[in-house]
Image (cartoon, rainbow, N blue to C red; front, top):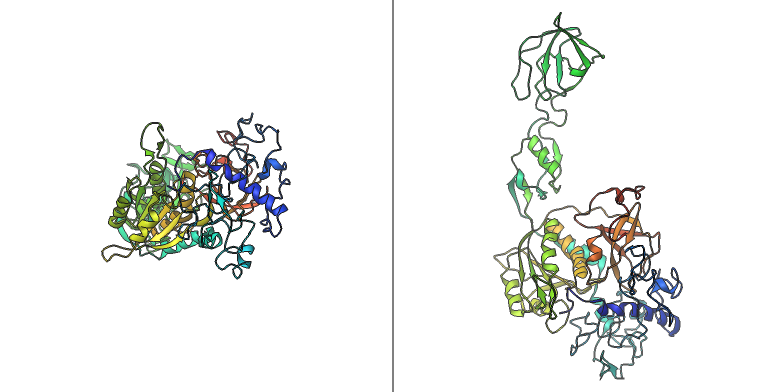
Length: 605
């Protein structure tokens, strides 16, 4: 499988090596690609090599507070990424050179015996930087006539002349793959903004289903039609306070008898100069001109009179009929989210049920023979983190999760599940690359699906995919989102492809995009967008450690993900923020309140 939930830090060391190698090539190799705009020159980032991915000098001790993942925790216990190794949250790069068989942009190694970098699978990581650079990379654009479909012989990125033997991770020589085209493979990786926009368009274009549901079942759904008032609000003049209803100027003669209470029908007209007790919400008697609050009135029991201790104005503390709305007036537009307040408003306006968009029906297919559902990892088996996480995440996005099924690495079972499912959207976890048990691509081909997105230029999560399943006369249009198997990479896929698609299917409005200055420098990928877990700190955001593709520790403490463009970001740069569905509104999110209690507490601050 392309990635597993429990990938260790050792599998990710090559990321730092790759960044260091890019820096060396930029400095030393003739004809090398210019450094991406915004990327720090090697050795010239904040605190020089500590923050740029450069290796420490021989003999230097990496285990310092400047390198929190190098063997020693910072004394302060702080786990925010402050510029040190923000690209991965892992240990500093070792002094070794990346193997030529490694992808120099990601540090991933090909599976032994795997056919590297085939045109079908651009993310197989056999060629350096395959599927890493955008289609507009200057070098890729300049060379097609010299070597159609690929890089010229001796390209600095390849690390070897095509006519020479190359070595794999074990040092075994092998021939270059004929026709292997990393540049062409990169061209198939959809830019992150385009992939997200495409998923949103597909969701909005899909036929929507709507139905009436009782108010108690409408929470979290989307209105399929405007919410129009069925009556005036309020429906009659009511008292805004407990006190006295009076007619004309005072003092007033207190009428004997029962008080006017809420929920009672019309009462007799109130004579001029008279007063009667009235409760909040009670219907105002005809001819009454004002309500005097109990605390603003004095009773002369001997004379049976009421005196006002403050000036009384005509209509005071009376809620007139239709003060809030008139019958037929639009209260909420279509596509509004049904919140508890909307449920209350609908009830007040006379509704017993609401016409809402049906929840998109989603089925989750968890792949991988190495996954445990209980107990501690053992004998090469690891706990399934995605099965328990994906379902609740999808529900928070407004979906109805009809099933979460664990299929292992069984191609036949996967094909049967894809063909038989009647869900609007299928979500698979793992199996999206080109390993010996990565079955998603072959199963989609067999099922006649159309690949709309086949890898995205984003880290983590680039092997994600989006497919339109073959039409079926008996079923509506269906789609499949393939998530990588690493947990944070899967979250990236959820926010990139699944969330925009589901938002459209559920009829929800697009969120308003916003950007916030970042507190610390953030490493960027040379060619791809990065999604980095962050927390709000006053009027800034702070990147979190533990942001490697196999890690959930950072995202578990995060308020959202920052969108880091290729080349990275400097302290003070404004970054777009993707909120998580459950991001709380707290004092720490409000500018100027970062010193509020709890604002700087917790595991990662």
